[in-house]
Amino acid sequence: MSYPYQIRSREAYDEAYKRSIQQPENFWADVASHFHWRRRWDKVLDWNFKEPKVEWFKGAKLNITENCLDRHLEKLGNRPAIIWEPNDPEEYHRILTYKELHNKVCQVANVLKNNGVKKGDRICIYMGMIPELAIAVLACARIGAIHSVIFGGFSAQSIADRLQDAKAEFVITCDGAFRGQKDIPLKSVIDDALVACPFVKRVIVATRTRTPVSMIKGRDVWWEDEIKKIETLGMTDCPAEEMEAEDPLFILYTSGSTGKPKGVVHSSAGYMINTNYSFVNVFQYQPGDIHFCTADIGWITGHSYIVYGPLSAGATTVLFEGVPTYPDAGRLWDIVDKYRVNILYTAPTAIRSLMGFGLGPLQNKDLSSLKVLGSVGEPINEEAWHWFDEHVGKGKCPIVDTWWQTETGSILISNLAGITPAKPSWATLPLPGVQPVLVDENGNELPAGEASGNLCIKFPWPSILRTTYGDHERCRTNYFATYENKYFTGDGALRDAEGNYRITGRVDDVLNVSGHRIGTAEVENAINMHAGVVESAVVGYPHDIKGQGIYAYVIFNGRHGDDQSLTRKDILVTVTRIIGPIAKPDKIQFVSGLPKTRSGKIMRRILRKIAEGEMENLGDTSTLLDPGVVEEIKNGHL
Ligand code: 6R9
Image (cartoon, rainbow, N blue to C red; front, side, top):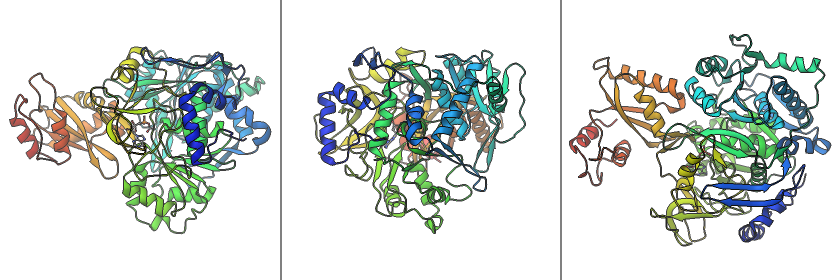
């Protein structure tokens, strides 16, 4: 494959950027012309951010799996599409060529059809990081079913919420998942979730851990048996369903500042083009490169840069089942060494955690294959940036600091490896087609040049979210109502005189813990479910490894008398049950009251400062109902 739209010089970037702003439709139509369409579009773009309505390539027909699989078969059929590295390094790895992946996707697509799945149906996928997860995702796309992948760390309650919201009648899962030393009983978690979801008609269970599971008659079937069935039926090929450009491809739930997680909906054509374009340009992918993204497919990074971006480009993508510290902190370097990885895309939290083990785990690991390093998920601090550069990249690999979100679908702000300059802890320049602006609190756009403000995007890019599932109004109020005619990211940013952006973090009540988005309201709701909890307030505080830690202030009048440590444990168990272990507070401080204004609003600014250990300069506390409570909270600070 060749990528005529790959930018190979600084001048070419400037030119592409300029054209993408002046003639966005021609720009994206040219990129799109290098994909496989069943029918070309009638109109490149139709949009308004008021409703909002965004339509790219209206009238076009395609199937994303024909672009990720079929179109590569002739020339790249025997090239590895997926290299799977198991959790246990002693277990044998698996390689799936494009031909093999195509066959398996067709098989499973037929299994889905044979189980009654139809175009437009929602399928929830709750699996560990095994090739079958990628196969399941692509099999859904093959027949036009809308996948909704749920990260393996979410609780039964969270799964039930998502299944109900998406009205998903089908589930694909595994008996269990291996992650480091843990063996997570996925099917049993699904069983708990399904107690609240009687509308689920079919659960397809793949075997991985051989954990004993209960299989409910009439509802649960084994993945392997179902494949045998369609083989006996002689169903081998599975022609791809013809999809409209704007047909939804998937739903992915993500946390916001209020309420339950929302189902971000991505479309077929725009998402495909933008993930491919950003993959090829940001990482400067060259044919034959081995790409290793350490994210989980349960998050957007895995969707875009393990599955769709690399596969649509005909790349080899590494899928790793385990964690960077198992069996030891050299695991990522072993994988790079073993498969001669060229592009390594990971998160600052992983880098910081590995830094803590010193340089020992890097010794005797051959990292000479590396050409490009990438970072995503949260701001990367300079110390981590330099460690990554020096000890992993050996000073010769450009680092791309890629800023984007579940809602943006693909990378929007990043340097292009070796093409545009990196600046430690700065995401730097927008990709072609992306028009960022900074605005002040009143929504006034700040003039070009140095500035600090809230980050918005004022023109649609192809992979922008189309709606939040089942509630378009929520999409409007969350992203398009804060500032007129702009998409609001929820992030604050700085801009330098050259137009580089530095993302400073969320300006709303969303936490970023180890690169995972968690809404403070969600954690508070979970804590408040615990008997005896009267009220709680959750804020973030700087954490050496996780980036942000979760600090909870809790008013409690329940059991256990003075045994606070027992109550703390009970609360952690409650949060784990309601959301999942990733939302467990790092610190819980019991208080007798919370700082509230006379109108009853919790003054989080004060709580944030105290959590950060900043006891002075708490700002104006005169509007507080009971200023005395602040003293008490300060004294009890953990
Ligand atoms: C891709 C992803 C999105 C939020 C986003 C921002 C933070 C992501 C970043 C970054 C600074 C970067 N974020 N990348 N902050 N520099 N390079 O992470 O999506 O899980 O939806 O999180 O993550 O705060 O708003 P998602």
